[in-house]
Length: 516
Image (cartoon, rainbow, N blue to C red):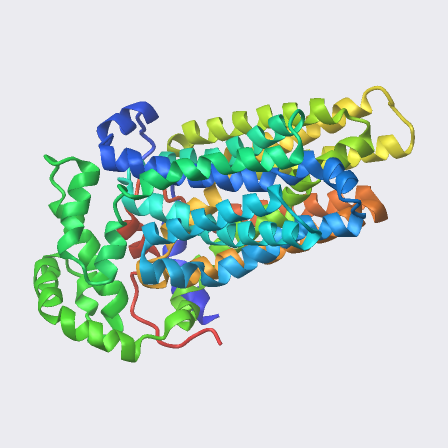
């Protein structure tokens, strides 16, 4: 195939690991611990924590909500799955919205939606208001799922980008764990109120966090790029090279087709001349952009085939591998295999935290690709063990040990997920797309994740009643296929700047034709 020939020269380079030396996460953090960076990181982490609280709400409250509101299984399936309907709606607008109004203003919108959703769930006067609150939260999740890792990768220095992104995503697991733990002792209405408290805490931070320097460059506010980078890196830092790299990257990625500047990829000595031309032609190019830009469909050019496939597959894989089944319906799994719900939720909470912390520590040591493979192998074993526990429970074999096996399998699944498949697909996706298609790519990845999430969430209860063993065998099979895909095609991006990663994917003659 034509695109295979185009991508093959880069594949070996992409799959090779970068520099294997590493320093500790703490020393990296201390080198960039400016106040604006800490505030931005904290706000993003709170957004991830909010995401986790939303996802973890239904599992510990399933039985009490159904009892208090007299809901049937189909009613609660709607309440659980309507979150993913909202995620789909949020996915459709996340890229365009964050590209149009910026990363920070988009955070304002997501935080407001979450707050309104929590209060609708806490004080529902009818079932439809309960579902509406969950839908609003889903829209927020659909937007922030891609927004948070993108914002972190765009403001963090390259030596800290993986650890910072993984640490921020760790708070998703923390949010799920907190809701699991409190859900065993707090009524479901009060639990919703508790879930809204941190949203109020985010509001003051949003007044002080900086906008993404790469987004500022993209919209033509290049004079603010240096100022923002100095605030993020420190007033005494030399950011001139980073400023030039960002501006030149924006220029070549967005305006390559208008000027056919091929030589910028072949000779570094032309960089300064290219930057001067960018400054002179900036106003004209902005006008041309609206006329010649192809918007969302630019993503479907042949040169984006590999990166688009990687992003879509990695992000959809956790959902197709049963993530929402384990997260939303953990109570059903525990009950079906004879595990105490209280013991199950507390153990699962600890497992998620352990996996997330390991992922933060190891992501910039062993790299993204290695952790993804280890994570997928562990999730496969978790699904397979869960299926085996259902086999034993059905045949009344090993009756005393079956609940223990079921609990261990769920814990293995969540530890493995937190180690890699939780944060890393979104980190990789936020790294491999250039800024001119990042919004469209975010929409596509998010839409794929949301659709697969809805399918699993809505149908899992029925699948569990149909054939519990077969359900988890299907999940295990999907993860196994994902393991093969990752081993063959996913590149290592550790230790590279965003511009270096993009040059590996897209440093080739421009190709105007699209896939379809």
